[in-house]
Amino acid sequence: MTGNGKRIISGQLRLGDSELSRFQLDDIIAKINSAQLLTGLNRIIFLPTRNQAINNRVLSHCRKLGIDVYLWYKILSENDIIPELDERSEDAWGRRGSGESGVWTRIFESEETYMFACPRNAKYNNLLFNRCAQMLGKFDGLYLDCIGFPLASLGLEAVFGCFCPDCRKQEPKLEEWRERVLEFREAAVSASDADLEKWGTFERLAAAFGLADFFHFRQESVRNLCSRYADLARKSGKGVGLDLLSPSLAFMGGHNYHKLGGVADWTKPRIYFRVFGPSSLPVEFYSLTMGMIAWGKRYTIPGVLRFIERSTGLKMPTNVHSLAQNYLPDHTYVTELNKAKSLAACPLHLGFECSLHPDYNTGVSEESLKTFLSYSTGSAGLVLTWNLLYVPDNFLRVIGRNL
Image (cartoon, helix red, strand yellow):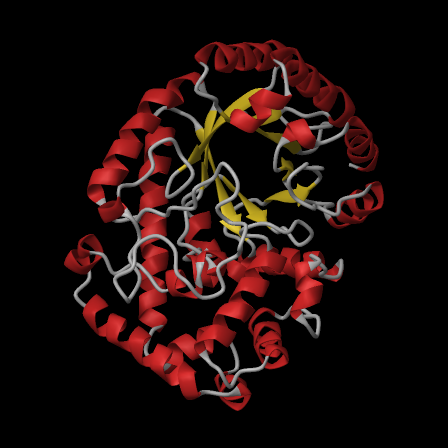
């Protein structure tokens, strides 16, 4: 089934405590109706609430409208099973949870915890996997989210994990890699912008300190985790979609588009360049900049921003104030989209910002939607992110008219 006779049009629907305090069940049903009427929506990616009566009503209503429903399942963080301390990702300094350098100050102010579990911790992942197996029967497919390692918004130290006992048992080289992470941290203390110029990019920096295989190990950890869930879904005849970090953040988070594309039926690149929130480009570049400045006292902010520019191919502003105002030019989206297309090993369903969320500045307008849609031609699908409830009907009309 395809939206408007051509593409899959999906809407992400999250029913957390804040949504249930703002919206009645009738409001939720009405939004699904208007989204289908105005855009040709034919798939809901549904993150259920703890209220089973509401979940069942949403499912039955979507089935009545002929809308497929995918289970939106968060794995390594932000699910109902918060990992115990010994199940969390561990950085090279033995710290579990968040780091301390460049942490985004608002990261713990929402309903989300940002406590990342280790993808190789058997106890935690078996518990979560069995829960998914019990839930999946009601749904038409499985959409996996939170499938990567922490990013810089949780602290630069958190980017360098995981070194927990479970990982060390499975990969003897982790002891050596841990020493090399510590060596890089020590080198950063006396390094300067000239050293950043010499290293060139984040990936080349990792290679210079003997950490290329470490980051590949992380990618394999994520791929193996997703493959297990994909096998579960396919044995039940259900489709599989993956939520992927924006290409410029993928290496840091353990995402490899080609490897993960071999696991999924389709993937959604999370190219958020307007919203100022975790995993969006402005916040992660801001946190990476401030984290590196905290590590290397001789780095300058313009020098780090140029380092990010070389690493990503994206035009950076000259100061972090512009990032804090969530400013990145529109061609950021085009560059990231082209990278995603070049890396993809399965169809892309393009996720784009179309919510007006009361707690985050998204900077979305009718004109920005038209700009995005002009770049989306030829895609296999579109995903209205990140919560259908916050997409106003006038935005839905713009989307429907410009598909």
